[in-house]
Length: 152
Ligand SMILES: [Zn+2]
Image 1: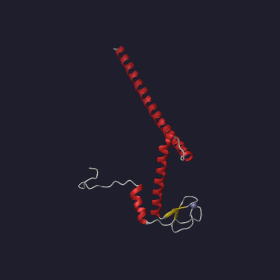
Image 2: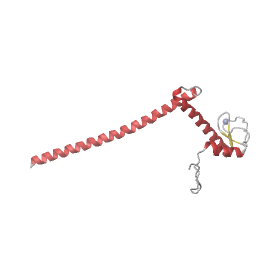
Image 3: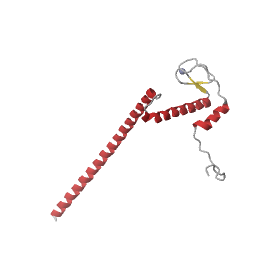
Image 4: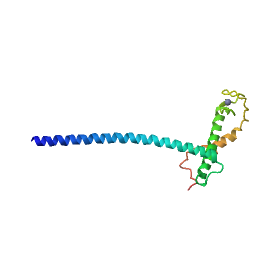
């Protein structure tokens, strides 16, 4: 009987040790997964910096392998600039040519750096609205289900 309990005790201890080992392994795995996630994010940021530096240096004559991406980046930057223009129009501000701060249209001086700035000519409203619809923002249009689709 005592031998039975000895063996049982041994088995339980061994099981407990395995559970402990497994818990430690799991905890190590979680720590390492976190670490590798952090390192991957850091690497992504480095790649992004390399990409930006490359774009600034070679956007006019990129190597063939990245020419399409460079062209996409140029288009995207132009789209962003157009949207930012629209936002400034809505806010009633223009950009300081010196520091890039917003200047209210009623002022001739930058409130941030003091530069005397030239107000832009006000853009015709209809044109600005047409630009919003055509170029810059993807708007999902609700289609009347009864209306025949042009795709059919
Ligand atoms: Zn300024």
